[in-house]
Amino acid sequence: MTGPTGRPPRVPPRWFVRAAWRSHRLLHRLSGGRFLWLPSGRRGWGALRLTTTGRRSGQARDVILGYIEDGPDLVVLAMNGWGEGHPAWWLNLQDRPDARVALAGRPPRPVRAHEAVGAERDRLWQLWVALGDDLDRYAALRETPTPVVVLEPA
Image (cartoon, rainbow, N blue to C red; front, side, top):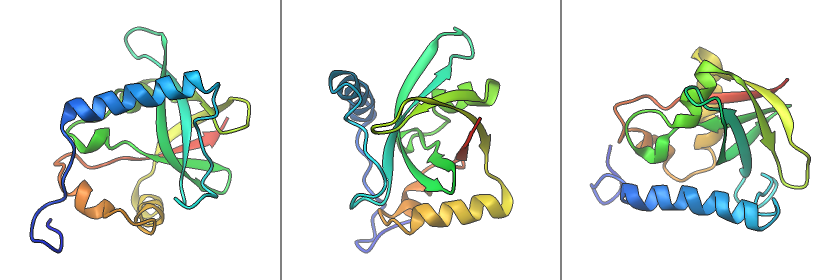
């Protein structure tokens, strides 16, 4: 899929995406958790810290993700920086769906993850699309469908 210029959207190199992921975790740690933000700001989406259990290591794994709220649920996209395949955190959740999330100014809480499918996926995907940023164009860069992941209060 191409944009107004007739070219596909530009995605940063993989090394840059990985460095950004590491820096997000570092900023969260150095700021004492204040690096996260809520969706009530200009963006329309927030950032959360998701802690999963590694499917092979059994160790806690943290990642910073963008999210939107859907009632009591938090909705994230398993987009792997628009690269092919699924991110490790989503593979971990598929194996062990119980996790913890930390939101700005709130204590961590337990959640249970599931992949949205059918009408639920379509509805939640449209909530993300409404925020702009050419989501459909970026998703079209991947052969792998982008899972919409719902984090329900446990």
